[in-house]
Image 1 (cartoon, rainbow, N blue to C red):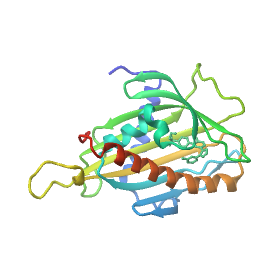
Image 2 (spheres, protein in one colour; image 1 turned 180 degrees about the horizontal axis):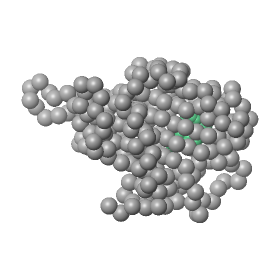
Image 3 (cartoon, rainbow, N blue to C red; image 1 turned 180 degrees about the vertical axis):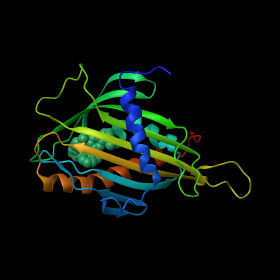
Length: 241
Ligand SMILES: Cc1cccc(-c2n[nH]cc2-c2ccc(F)c(-c3ccc(S(=O)(=O)CCO)cc3)c2)n1
């Protein structure tokens, strides 16, 4: 398998993120639940680094009708980013490192009174071969998308933007309930469990109250919008494992 200059960093981050799969009680180790919407629960930790609000965010969700590979594909696939991302203005793929790894540059809509933010990050979709199995549920497959900040010589930053630093992971697992009548597996047999984590360092001053209210409002909205998007996009397609 051809590696690239960020392969080591990527594998290290995947290992760290997979530790989340131990389904340790999210209410434990300092996570505070900030919202709940049906199956979706959103948690945060209060973390200030160098005077900046860097609250880690974790969301757990479970959606029907889609597989883990479909969920991760539409989260990673650059061509459909604008279909579901509503806080992104400029979005460019600077480099394609392999068939599932790109380096992207994007700017986010400004949120007054903070300066506009941009991100320069590696985005990679990886199948997890031997995930830590938890409890009695055996996943059919496990996929992860990792987005983390990197440098790139060709980034042509939009002037006035403050560079945000991100460490994001979307981990998805497909659970299949075989049909009673021994028939083929259809979308009704699928349940996709999702863990989404986002560590966003805003990179510069932003009022704590504004940031915390954005996170509380924007993450649940984004996760609902994104999961609905994937269910709609795949409903008439063959199941992708
Ligand atoms: C969906 C959402 C949640 C929380 C904040 C906002 C937001 N509103 N206005 C500016 C931002 C903003 C600022 C900096 C960022 F790094 C990201 C950011 C958020 C998510 C991701 S991702 O990797 O999950 C999805 C790829 O865009 C990357 C960057 C978003 N949008």
